[in-house]
Length: 260
Image (cartoon, rainbow, N blue to C red; front, side):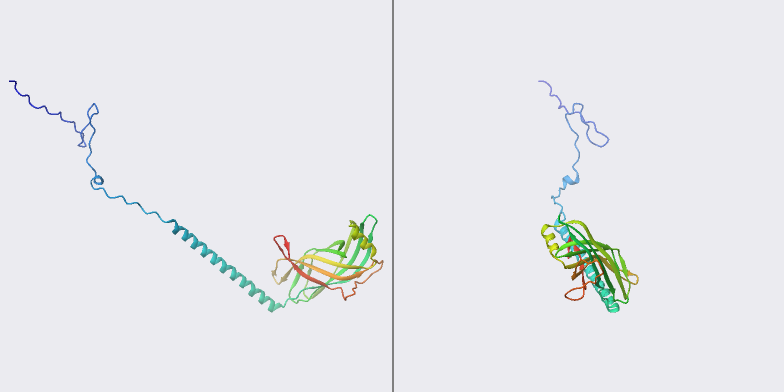
């Protein structure tokens, strides 16, 4: 009988300096690493909670509400302050409106030719009176227009002026038209009349001055109605069948292109 061969043992693996076995040249075996603590004690997965978007929306809404509240309170405070200031000025100064009247008027020309072209000239004087003792009125350039029966017969301008306290100013102006084209109906209506009913309009902007305070200028329109005149070569005083040729003034405020 043959002697039994001793069992062959595997060749020892080379060990690196880390204490791990090195791979063979053929690459058949891979290095093994000891399991980490996380692998030994694996914790259950817990998803992280993300901040809810509703909380952010609530924060934004709260900030907007606070800003709107403060802006509203600020506007209310400004309105109250302006009202108190206006009341104090009214009590101290007792402001009054300036008065306007047409003191004289002379219609020297009003000719409508056969081709419906109008030529006119109107000389007038407007008296402005400021009854206030402390308030000064500052007027911009004044645009004048005259009409008869709804037909504009002439236009003119008056330079800007300052109306002092307790003062009366007489403004002289000329309203004229040269070669103005008219509608046939309007032209025939002017030809038939010997005495014309006139309406005078003055458009300007005015502000007040009280000491060092100067207000912003606002638009005003002065309308003088009920004046009757005929073409004359001499001087004529503005007259009316209803009384004196007094004028009315009203504010003209523009909001988004609309004139109120």
